[in-house]
Length: 405
Image (cartoon, rainbow, N blue to C red; front, side, top):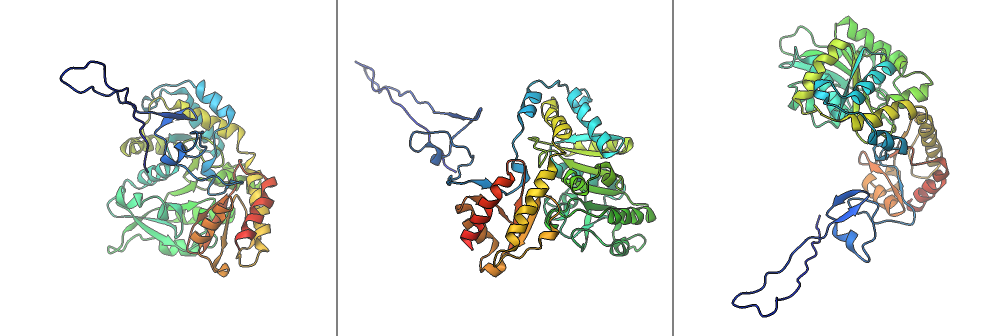
């Protein structure tokens, strides 16, 4: 990315003797949305009007962003809460806003305690490290083959935790009970020892699928049979609760620990919460420090998380419903491979191979038509709904898709 530095020279000082005049140099900074950045070159064209995207993205007549629910902006009530937040040093356990957030999250998930972390990836990693610290030199983690902890967390369990990942093929993200039981390694000296079972709910790459409660009960049975802990990557578990029409604790009760994300559909700017027993969370605090997650006056961030958990969970049903509307419209289009009945929450993944385009090419063309989305495979495209997208925009998205087919 290139930047422009504007230079001014006032000219030579009159009657200067024996030397050249030094020029006054200074850089022009621009302020956009209360934050100061060097502006990209494209943003300085014309009259230097404010750009609404950073880095610069060419605007179209219509701009709808379905890339992820991570694009959500903090609500006005979050911004007010952040401005007024009580803060303290959280490493000393003295930030009152973080303490309130952790108590609230633990209460909602039915756990004894909780820990605020900067991200869902760190939350999962800290959970894995905490559960497996006795087997870190030769341990193995069972997880679904397309799970986020396996594919999208930079191999943290291996690079930091010295742990192997043992993938199990799931059905819409749900690992079969007998397959997990068969994957457990206990006594053979040639094999790493199974240290943990991980589930993901909702399951991102299974199209936002909700793990059935019966499947979670089966994972609990296997974990108890082999005295193994069970961790849930619940980044979107509140979407799952909305889809099932139950309290989130009815889902999380099967797991020993659960990581929940605040910065996706719940719209907080930053953060995740790891929930578990008091003993587990006390140990997790040390691993959070190990990976650089200890924060100081972070109650400013936690204040938004409190709003997320008290004001934003109920509305996730709207995101789920809008995704179903999109799926129903897409399913009838030539070249689109999609079973709309499989869409349960706010993620829609569909196949575009029959259109003659790859997923990256499809996303590029759709972006030019005003709808931003992600390719998640050679021919797989993902839409994710969130609170900045409402059902009145569904027809516009479907029309844009039709225009590129």
